[in-house]
Image 1 (cartoon, rainbow, N blue to C red):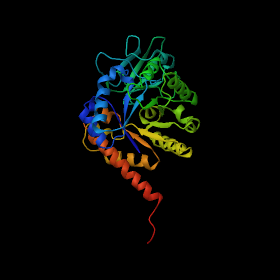
Image 2: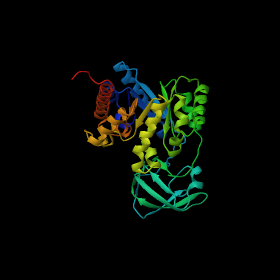
Image 3: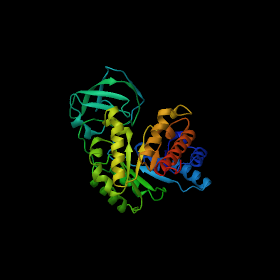
Image 4: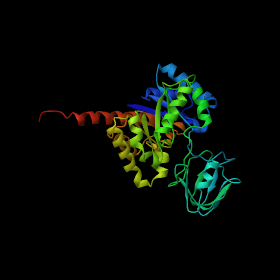
Length: 335
């Protein structure tokens, strides 16, 4: 079983990373949506120091920017109130221009993993007028999703290709590709890795929308690790549809003997609390029983107050689930 944390301000000190490794962390994710490899130099230096001092061979995963949809940078966080009018695009909140044709009246826009909800009232060539349905605080570079919209973007950005060329010197061992929709997306990454001189890097294909789920039977046979990424996937589905989607994705991966990783909100409450909820540890346990070969924390370590405690809970719960899984497959004999 692999256990991953996410690098960020919450675990930027070498001592914190050392304690996470000592708790059983086997690898770390670096999210490039928040900055290129050169801009992450201080985080990477802390990581390499922690690995050296613990003698760890833990891996480093690059989570590429890819076609992931996010708002741009804001001068300061915005407090959005229900009923408020909001402009997306020129003169308002910056968004990828490629989205504008899809912002038609009635289209829902989910921000920050669905915490905030807008509805488009009118669209245009440079901006769209929206109404806030579910408000809250919006910060820079938060995720953006258009449920039900067939938005299709290239698998890799030029920034991704530049980062891949720097991967070897940064000690990268794997690459996470967002919003995988088809085998062609993975082949594009394979070619990019070849071109960058790092064909040996592991590929983690992220399922983040309904199209990726629909085409999973085509993706699973390729043999790369599938990532059930419940953040954006949860934006694309209704809340009560997500558990079924995760179970079905796990079933297809087991059918092809394809490794899969489960991520997002495994221990969400531990961003602010030193102990998890009962539902969270049960979620982790069930993911392992479903056959997950890896688990990953995101905000819990990147921005949370208790990154070491969260990793400790993740590992201990995962290992307990593995023991139970082994016992269930090989029940004791006798009376």
